[in-house]
Amino acid sequence: MTSPIDTNTALADLAAMYRIRHLEEKITELRKQQIIQGSVHLCIGQEAVYVGARGALTDDDRVFSTYRGHGWAMACGVPAEGILAELLGRETGVCRGRGGSAMFSAADYGFYGENSIVGAGAPIACGAALSARVKHEPRVALTAFGDGAMNQGAIHEAMNFAAYLSLPVLFVCENNTYAELTPIAETVRDPELHKRAAAYGMPGERIDGNDVAAVRACMAHHAHRAREGHGPALIEMMTQRLVGHYYGDMQSYRPRGELTAAKQHEPIVRLRTQMLASGTLGNVLDDVEADARTYIESAAAVALAAPMAACETVKEHLYA
Image (cartoon, rainbow, N blue to C red; front, side, top):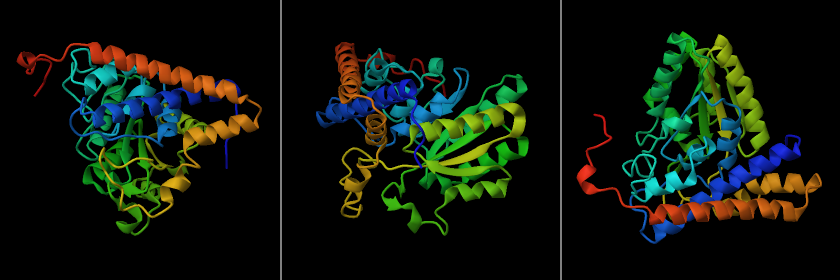
């Protein structure tokens, strides 16, 4: 079921999703040219998860993402220039060019970063939530992970810990139906992963992760509940990535026609269709996309012109 349209909110959501989409496309272009080096995991097709979820949180809340975290960073307000500069190894990157695509963070924006260890962000989010409890601060910690990570021990330990202590943690499973290259249904007895929440005594819910309004409403409910001291929740957001697991993934494991079908229901197409049906003019929506593209192109130009991080400073700004 599709959520009703509020035009102003929908326009803002569409703009935010377009910025993430064009950021990822620019990253793809730069990676293809080998200007960006190393592993890159893109989130094209999953934008509603980030925009809707972050829209339900406050500026004081904390977000811990997966290694597929560019979209989360953008949704938290991290400037595209800082993200791109980071991936380009520039001194002006959010981590001074040291984090790259899979391990950057931007604490000033409540984005406590990516993690290349599958599922490792969940215990860290529990620590942030425990800190909020000790300091009597009404903060919520959101930890995001993929469907494959649901089989990691760290996820189960974190959910048990958070549930036992009634910590304000929102466990968000971005279920794009593939655990890297393997369909999640081939690795578990029951692919409805939200049901696992019951074993820990906390709510579990599966929602349409391509409906940005539905994501926001669900997250707002559980964030309020957590802030009131009622503990964590597991939200399984059903979506599809429209690109490979990593840059260069040929996706030969996907059934014929699956991507074509997914592109008919991805979040930007869906929201545009809803808005057109509700009376919004097509040229208004086109202008929103054009503005987003201009923003990303401008950010890329500035990032590319920034100085490379100096090799002699490689040990600076690090903690071990």
